[in-house]
Image (cartoon, rainbow, N blue to C red; front, side, top):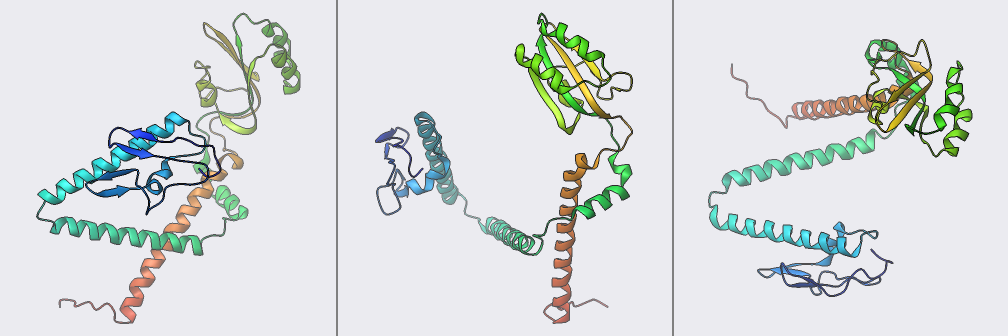
Length: 287
């Protein structure tokens, strides 16, 4: 929140009767007045500023700080009560140690992954996997490129758009002036393949996810308020292979995860084998 206007001064936090003061050039820090105290334990501005952002309103800032202090206080109070009432802590200590061990191992693995697996998957490898696993990428619903138009039922724009719908190829450039003239809602799907479900969510609920555009290149639907027109420039029908660009990110994520899994498996195997080889691990097998 540095270099922003003063957010608030002398805010009373009723829950704990504390004072908060934030300015554009100076903040509270540890070693100066805390913004709250609980049984002598202080809470400083540095501890709560993570919940604030420069674009927060005055009211939202107060609410966020108040919520943070309340949650902090409740956690501390319950922890104090637990310490007073739970005397058998051996099981808790074991769980804490187990969690700490798991967390340390996870952080170590993530460090190695960032260090050793920073190179991106090559495009050629993605294409090779795509070509070798065509059966995994069969379209189960229609994909299309085109535009989606929404207009009021009584709009005069329909009369001007109708003649364009008779052509085998409908030009987006021909529709745009009409859309601008009548302030129509237009959603463009011309830059990437899109599933039919996308236009179902926009209001065209009566179109099937497997609708075929073999006979004509558009589909119309009407409800009480609007007319919906889906203009299709190109489409992939059900049963065809999904385009590479449509599944590329999915393949890349899958290959990255597989690469990580193989790396971690090898890391574990290497550690185990090295322990055996160096006799750090001695197995007393029963005969």
